[in-house]
Every structure is written in C-alpha cells, then in structure tokens.
Image (cartoon, rainbow, N blue to C red; front, top):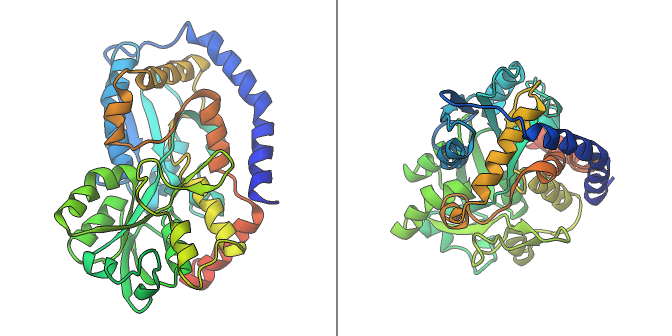
Length: 367
C-alpha cells in the first residue's frame, strides 16, 4: 500500500465521521462553555527551549483573548522520553471543565506510528481542535558549510558530525535519515529534552550539525545566521497540491533536501529509502503540532475551542504577527484538522517496515 493510497483511504474513511462530528459540534456551538475566572493549562511535553514552546507561547495570549470569559492560558512543560512521558500522562486525564489542553508534535506522533512499547497513548481518544503545519531547517557552522560545492554535499563526507537528538524514534529520524542518504557520518547524542537543547549544544560547540523546526529556527537560529556563526544547509521543503516536495514558503530562497539529494552523487530521490523518508516527512511536518482536548470532552467544549482558534486565525493582523513566529504554514481547524490528524498518524506499511529495520540496524533500537 503506497502513501497516496493511505492518504486517500484515510480521507474517504473520515468523510462520514467528520460530517457527523461537525454537525454535532455546530449544534453545540451555540451553548459553548464559559471559562470566565478560570486558568487553562496547556501542557507541552517538551522543554521550554524548543519549537513547541515557541508555538504554544505564541498562541496562548491570543487564545486567552478569543475564549469565552477570557481565561488565563498558562503553558506548562512536561518533558521526558522525547514527549512520551507527557503524552502518556495526558492519556490518563479525562475532561472536567475545559481547562486542560495538550500540545503534541511529530516527536509524539512517530513513536505512536512505529509501535514504540513505551507508548501508552491513543490519538483516537483525544479531540483535536487545531493542527499546525510547519517546516524544518538543517544548518552548519560556516567552516563546514564552506566545504559544500553548491548543492552537492559530497565535500562533507569525510567529516565526523555530532548531533544532539531527542531519540531515534522521534522526529529526529527525518534529519538522521536525510543526512545518511547524503552520505554524511552523523553520530547522535541521544537524550536531550527538546530541540532547543540541541541548538544550545550547537552554540556551545558540542555539536557541529543541527536542525530546528521553523518556529525555533526563526527565533533561535536566525540570530546565529545573522552573527555569522551558523549557515543554513537545507530545508525539508513543503508539499504542493499534488504531493510533490517544493520549496518551503517560509524559506523560499533555501534549497530543499530533495534538491541537495539530486545534486549529491549516491543520494537517490526514488526507491524504498526515499519513499520511507518522504512518508515520515509527510507524517511529521504538514500537521506537526496539534492541540487536543482530553477524552470525554463534550461537543460544546470542542466547538468552543475550535471557534476560538478560528477567531485567532481571523484576526486582521494574524498573518503579520505569525509570520515571524510560526512561518507561513496552514493553521487548521474543524474537518481540516481532523484530516490532518489522520495523515499524521498513518504511514504506508512498507515505509514503517523500512524504518523499523533501519532503526535496528543503525542504532540498535528494537521495536
């Protein structure tokens, strides 16, 4: 079963469920919930230095303004096990009064997709109210970037790279597999609690290659680029309407991994390795960050949060204020968010099998 088949079946299977859900939500929307005088806790299962933190901190005050009763929205961090600790905790929570929401990321999705035995959470039990697309950028110290020949990365093949990683089964498998396809020798140091910690390793000279999601790159790495201590290598790209990888709209002047792969001898943009990389890129980035209400949330609560995020997106200044913090990516609610969740939590069996075998062979990770 190929990637297009998986996405098509997921979309068709969701039509009835989505239509029924949205009909119930629309009926409940007029009732809503009132959060006046309350504090909403937005739990992020990473450290406070990464892209998820920047994403949540951007939305929190805007969500406070848009929710009925203007509650205080507080972002709380629960890092551990590459986000599995926080996700497992959220799985054990039940809806009470609408004051708990959870923010997941691709690093939460990948262990779920791969059947990681530490996963105790089930996405189908949760209620998605926002799905945010994003991108990612890999970057190098200037002295190493200068060893590339245009888009050809062959000049880097003799370098020993160190990379701070949250774990091989996390979102980091996208850059790790990409760098391997380019012929680079990258040794990950596993165990960091967020991608921001990887950036700090790079800044301290403890790592000589890194990648950040777009929100973290824009705020945390752009100053390094401007100071001349970091040089962007490539973005992962974005998907066009036909499912092709094109340049990331947030970084239109930056080449994509596909472009570097095409220009680097030995790297192929076809075959099972490429298909696996693309499948996990699709699962990890176009709907990378999502907001959920816990199991048992009533239709009125779901409608209230969906309408609040819709109101945030409808602000006249949203495009302007989000561009420098989130980048230029879809912010999805309603049926779009539900469809994005389906795409982010399914991959073709062949891609999963390839990655499971690769993780065992390359990193000794058995799933």
